[in-house]
Each structure stands twice: as C-alpha cells, then as structure tokens.
Image 1 (tube, helix red, strand yellow):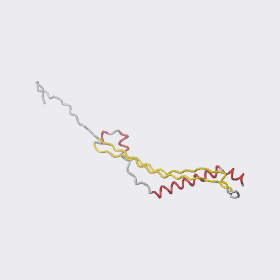
Image 2 (cartoon, helix red, strand yellow):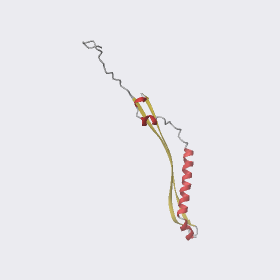
Image 3 (cartoon, helix red, strand yellow):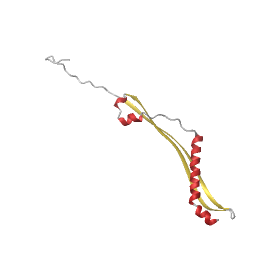
Image 4 (cartoon, helix red, strand yellow):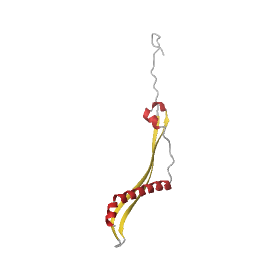
Amino acid sequence: MRDSTGKKIKVTKYKTLKCRVIETRQFKQAHLEGVVEYIDTERGVTFLSEPVVADQIFENFCTTAEGDLKILPKEKREKLKSRFVPFPSNMDMLYDAGNGLKQAIGDVILDNRVILIKKY
C-alpha cells in the first residue's frame, strides 16, 4: 500500500501464537503401619506398645506442549525435558515400604533398649 504521495505505508502485522502446556503428576504411595509390643512372657502382659509407620512414595512430574514452543518461558521449556516414567509395581512399592518398616522397628527397639535392659 502507498499513501497519496507514493510512499509505502508500513502496516503492522499481528500474529496470534498459541501453545498449550499440559503438566502431569504421577503419584503412587504404599503405606504400612504396625505396632511393636513388648510382652512380659512370665506374666503374659504387654508392658510397652509403640506404633510404627513406613511410607514409600513414587512421584514424577512430566510436561508436554502443543503449539509454538518458542513463546514459552525458559523454565517451562526446561520442564518439557521431563518424561513419563512407568509406575513401579505394587510388589516393588511394598518391598521398599517393608524395608522402611524394618528400619522403623529397629529404631523403636534401640530407643527402648534401656527399658529392656532394666526389665531383664
């Protein structure tokens, strides 16, 4: 286009850019709990009871995008490098939680060793 004097008229062109970002959280948890009971075998009486708990948590964040990726801020583009990860099996989760429960039981026994030494 030209004006009445013949000069070119600069026309601003607008372009609509879109990018849809989808952030997904993968989460799975195994929870084990129990009680450590100290029993006086001579009298058959429980003289101390301590609860124990163990959790195993799987958590993963992944991000995908559709559209013009150039318009995304740097931190969003960095998140696009993350990927989906297969969930661990139930047996793996329980096995790992069981190891945590063993550790918790060991901690309770160590914390109460003075009671055991005095008692016996």
